[in-house]
Image (cartoon, rainbow, N blue to C red; front, top):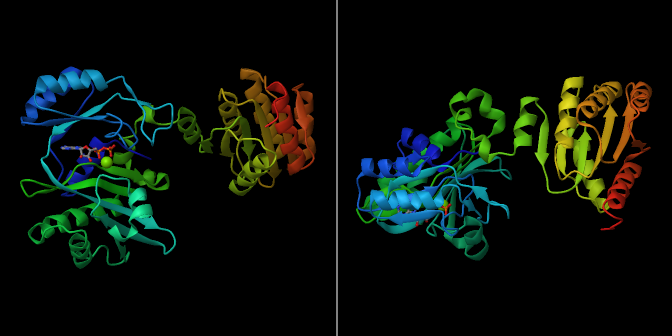
Amino acid sequence: MKIHEYQGKQLLKDYRVAVPRGSVAFTPEEAGEAAAAIGSSAYVVKAQIHAGGRGKAGGVKVVHSPEQVSEAATELLGKVLVTHQTGREGKEVRRLLIEEGSAIDKEYYLGIVLDRKISRVTMIASSEGGMEIEEVAANTPEKIVRETIDPLIGLAPFQARRLAFAIGIPGDKVNQAVKLMLGLYQVFVEKDCTIAEINPLVLTKEGKIVALDAKLNFDDNGLFRHKDILELRDPNEEDQKEIEASKYGLNYIALDGNIGCMVNGAGLAMATMDIIKAYHGEPANFLDVGGGASKEKVEAAFRLILSDPHVEGILVNIFGGIMKCDVIAEGIVAATKSIGLNVPLVVRLEGTNVALGKEILKRSGLAISPAGNMADAAGKIVSLVDQTAGGVAQ
Ligand code: ADP
Ligand code: MG
């Protein structure tokens, strides 16, 4: 789960990480009031969307009076911002962070991620702040330094100092940087983050080390123990179908293609997407209904697929073990009863209660193309979708 920059900064502040003074605003009036309350010679008006690259896309504006803050807010609110992280459709700006402008002397990069290769949390730092870290890694990898963190010891102060010196933080500012790094590590661990990134971390002309941006992502599997983080969720920023899926405990991820998939088991779901691709089709989603799902859960899953306007065909691929084929069939029939079915549906069922499942589907009168195996299923759905799209072969 992602949160907004202003929420991340509030959280960081609770962990003694220095951030600029600022507050959130939903209207131009609130923006002006927020600026007046800060009282500064420079203000920054920042679009709050769950994506980076806002600076380059015009989503970060520096102005010099509360009136100008209101004007900038009027311009930004409601605007669709397209950055390299939003995709082509962009994201609508509904909230702003109004904060005091910092006089920047130098920008750095600081981040924490899990290094999966060595199964260790790793702190990464660079003298090249403000730029995409991927770019720095590709062009000047020697400018990235890292410290592997022992989970039992945590980030040791000497490691933080080593990083601070390595990226060129002036000696008399190193203690500030160390304090900030220790706070960042603490929030990462205590809140089950998957990423904690400050880009840029800056040294101001007044000699302060401050987090000017904040990106915190959280592990969805840890959210049950962080009610405070769950409250920060902004449904406007998330895929509505994924939110709906999470209510039913379904593993659903929206993708770009046009073939909706309903599968049981993550491995089979991956294999199904692969075989659709092998037949030159494009899956519209990853969906694992899991083992032992109820009819209601299957119905919700199928409704989700049907409600996706990009779906031009559906492939149901079930290997019933704990999951029973008749329950799957009942869920499909129940979902199509309320919404109807106007795209081709290919079903491949195997395993527990398969005969009963097939019988239920047959009796439903739905136009279903049965498939004998996975290759048959993928081939059938891809050609059916191609036919409805006017015979355009891909
Ligand atoms: P993004 O990463 O989405 O582009 P940032 O928060 O990193 O957004 O802002 C982009 C740039 O804007 C920063 O690299 C920094 O130069 C400038 N900036 C952001 N916040 C402030 C601030 N409070 N004071 C001065 N400059 C800022
Ligand atoms: Mg940034």
